[in-house]
Length: 332
Image 1 (tube, rainbow, N blue to C red):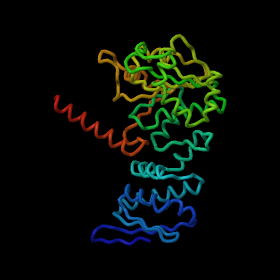
Image 2 (cartoon, rainbow, N blue to C red):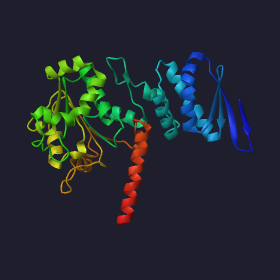
Image 3 (cartoon, one colour):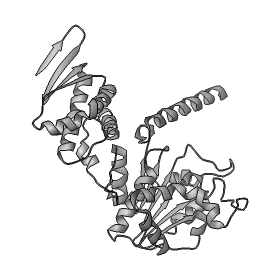
Image 4 (cartoon, rainbow, N blue to C red):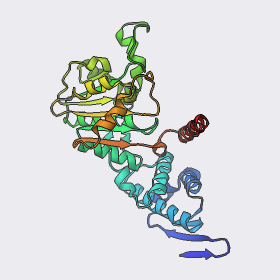
């Protein structure tokens, strides 16, 4: 049923759902999920029994209806929904009204030891994991908070658990400007650990602490600075190079030529946060120029819209972008 008020171009749509428990889950505790939807789509939602009333401008109401129906179907399929999922889903529908949330959220990458399901939270993340499945080498390029490294680690763990690779190798430039570790206190492990900590954090989020320790002890998982890759050939391995924007051209070429038989490599980085000296060209930037279009190599580009951390992160990125544009105008 649809009632239209021609005076202020506001309409009210009535949606009827068969399963009230599913609808109640969608409503959320104290209506929290509905409040998120109202903020994203600029509508007013009312729940009465198994009826949902959407009041707002026609286009906004139509998008809100799409989001509600998609989320309802997702919950009905057994997906445990959280407020963050409602936010991700809302962003997806706003960017692509034809998107199918089931195709995205139910594409399970890995189930952690704590029964936490890891799955893509947006269209670009979905493209990213599909590219990893399809290609031998994948570049994930974009700002912080878009899930590039986390999803790559999840895919690596999934491949390991399924027996599709024998080991995982996680690599990072140890420091931002050429791996100059000598001034740091401690042995080599103590020197590089601070720079590799994000990779440890991702692993501990997916596997129990004891299991991670055992896999390290057996050499099944290895985390190392990029300099340690020279001269190696890595067979039957899932290799991730993180913070690749801070590699030199020589380092990037060295890393890419380590790939052996039945191996897969994922390279992640943010070309807006290059910390190399001005005289050094980023190996990631050069790789984009040289390798794009080669069969078996995929490039997936994330934007600020793909940020899946706290919503404030997206606002921070936008603020810095505005400042950079202003600085460029002043220089010109």
